[in-house]
Image 1 (tube, rainbow, N blue to C red):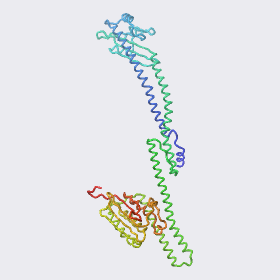
Image 2 (image 1 turned 135 degrees about the horizontal axis):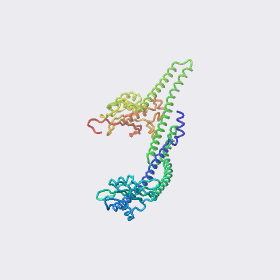
Image 3 (image 1 turned 120 degrees about the horizontal axis):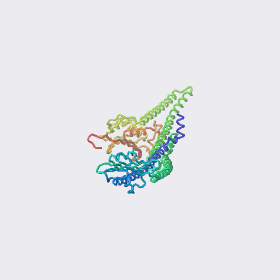
Image 4 (image 1 turned 135 degrees about the vertical axis):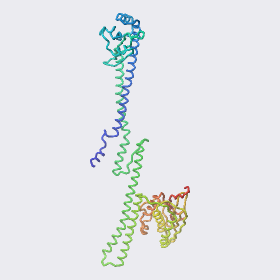
Length: 483
């Protein structure tokens, strides 16, 4: 695994890199195009030359054949006399045979084959009454052959065969091929340079993104990728930056949460340790003092229990475990919570009022909604003033059901309102600890509400001093009702 990590740090070998794959792909495409460019024009020119030469020789052979077809038989003397009068087939070798394929005339002075049989495929085809022609490039020259039958009243008297050996047009074809090769070499060199530059351009963002991923892997969550252009790689860089933003935010929240949780747990533990040391170090110990210290230890243990329970609740909320949902009447839940907290309100000399509209149902887990209502109403009572008032109202607002809890306490300063739902955040830390607060209740309430598609907002009491909390949830759609 360590070796694999070192290999990743050194980078990908060039021949395995995306840049090499891009370059190879482009070069293969260019090579395929060049092969087509080098072969297709030459083949087309070659076919045109062959067709032209075959057509010319066949036309000349037809002229000779029509001139010879004046009698029922072909003789050597008659053919020679006729050929002496013709000026056709200049530069081409001419053979004339009788019906049996015996050569009666041969214009070649280097290879006189008079009296031999013409063992030539085109001649054999012509003696069967059909025209024949063929061209090929061989030994630096174009070899063209054509043969036609000599016909007299439907009878085949013999055949006229022409053969041409052309080096001039062969040189033209060779020069075309040579020029195309030079052009191809130049194009290959230019294409190679362009492919290298283009592949580097295409892979630059990939290399940057890979480098950024390595930085983030090492813990540099603030590292960002500079996105250029509007292509998919630029979009990928933007998505990476948004992902690292979220990771950085989550990591900061995690560190803050761990720090705050450690601090909150350390305070009651330190108190318990101090109280136990005080008991152990005093000898003899007054039992009244012992009972007082033990009572304080119990209160700190209860506080530790509440913090642990709240942390477990937040862990379950963060895990997003699916809840069993059923129709829940928000007014009924709020009434139960108010009834349970009425003795607490009397003890704190706080008046608790309820205004509950009917038909405010939502689809949720009843225990979760109960927890939300309990946290909001308990906080309103706990942080109120003697002689104060808490108003609990349940209403329906279009497609929402709303739980509103308003108190007449000291209120929350405007600067603290955006942070009161943060975990472990408390406006008055000294008073909050004195009342047994953990700084997690509002955070749990808001996360629970969001788990059920709702949300909680906080603001000043419009009627005067104090704070108002509103918990909104999607209303349950009744049968036949349009929400």
